[in-house]
Length: 332
Image 1: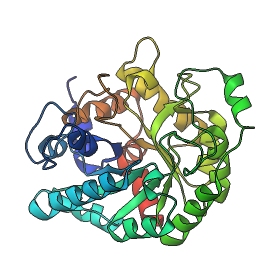
Image 2: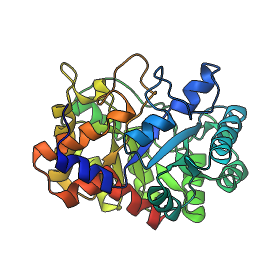
Image 3: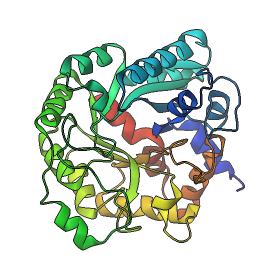
């Protein structure tokens, strides 16, 4: 896609934030070196292509179900920043992201994708916070004993009636409520992506600081469980939260996922609750063989171009590209 001068200037000016990617954990699974400073087109993202694509800050998934793996990922993220300080900055606050933008570096923020790796221990959560992790995704969909919600989430296409019925099912576990309370105390962002509908609504009420929904789409546009309903979007906005728009084609459109359909999801949120509650949560390297839209991080300016073509004003586009997530980082 050709990039217009306006889109290029806006993209270069913006603090661009991707609130979720799985590149580091996929490299670990593939037994590839965690040093991401070399171009590697087997993956959707690496540091050179992130900088080429104008990405300022990426939330790196560093923990899910296994604590040993989480510790290896946190260590890998720190080593990436310590061994390549001219390119990478491990960010633990909003000011670090601003500094990365000023210095032309990639800021990385540690993000749990599930609290199962905590093994029921708030002390482990606190220690991960001390190690720099700043986002706690409550669940990767698992449920039951030892997790943050009582029943598993469903990942599939569904109907509005089924979504409404799901609200009445059991929600958070006692441990899930404790995790939210501790995140509130620490100043750690609560991430509601993957949560069951019942857990989402309960967590929204318990969150004293703005929560996020790091990566998903809009259910009214594409009827998948990984999309938020209009009521959920309103509730998230009422709490000052932000949802990250996933680039996953199956979430964008069931039949014909395109960049235009992706922007339809963005526009839906803006028309529903205004421009302050939508951002990017690409889910790069987290969707198996599916090809994201845009297909790799160096092509992020194509998303900005699509926003320009849709007719959004500059202030709205700067918020979507990263300004809204920056507001949450500054607040929390």
